[in-house]
Image 1 (tube, rainbow, N blue to C red):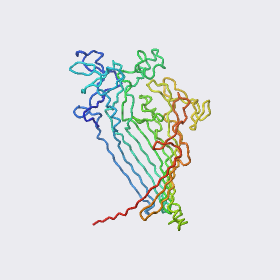
Image 2: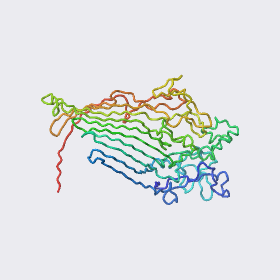
Image 3: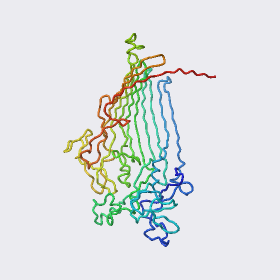
Image 4: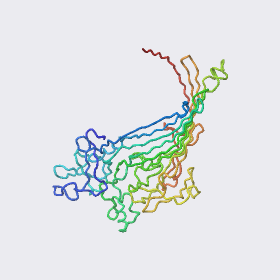
Length: 502
């Protein structure tokens, strides 16, 4: 379990969504019923009596695999395997907890903390001296946003299995067909640690509150008849738990022609589907899901295609030594042979279907403090009063969900544009000496200058961009996605190495 070397880390082990408990005897001097209600953050680390979360010694990882040559001729292999693999807690996740009391530097309001010292409650400005127990009090209405790690925080693990057949069809041509499956358990996710309470929301509506007012921040700080949480010490809370699940099934095919007669080609095709019921607790994409669930009491609504799900993907790489010039079949002598020697053409072709994206509105229809997903009220593939884009999403086919329920458009229901890219290179090696060559390269990225659209806009309240891709996918170096050409000149040295041994 990680810890900060000077114990400058704390965690909350109480229920952040409960009523603020009494933290001191009201008879204590300087303490009243009001000021003594709060939540106690405990320092964690060596000597404090607390770990950030419970240790876990159940990380058992069995592995089993086999390979079988059914015809005993070295041309066919049947393979299968099963294994369990654990992840780890990455630094950013628990690192965000360094801003918890008494180390928080920017509260919403001051004073936020009351430090217990000498039997009295002393209001303090932040930063505070390190003490074993520090309270943040609900009566302040501070709306503090802590990062909490669940006490029971087992390591995520994946059960992985595969079964496949590899066959050599010809001397230099093989084909692989594999089924690959993964099942993820205890995946990290974040939920609202202090969500609005459905019972309080219902009671406020029954008491005459307008459902349109019981949304977003008013659920915490809306005053009488609107406040719908058990305490206002926290304005929501990032509660990190290991409760996510994931599923992956894929068919993976690979055809390989090894380099012979100056030519090689390899093609890899995957047909797969990845599903999960959570999103990354730190950097979830706004277009494929969001960090917090729409409703922390209805996590089943978060099950859908993973944000990185790609159903179809084909990648082909190829290289061909042109059969001209010295040492080749044609035009291999004299000045012409020298000029034409060493030419090679190669490339990589990538074709894949699009990534999924989520559709959100600007209405907190479930009274959870977060904008919800949409209702589908028409056929998104039909023409409408608003122009469609290449994804076929029509703005008129959707509407904001009514108050009291979630939208009926599930997580990551629609898919964005696919990807079609060709990168190629033409190179020429010219021999200078036996151990030295000069290589000239012409590299072209996105040969056919195809527009590689980014994900469409997914916010219903922005009809000008909703369902429309208004950017393109840049290359890994951050440059334009349009066609690029570059030229290179390399001097290649070949050094003979002698090895001696006894």
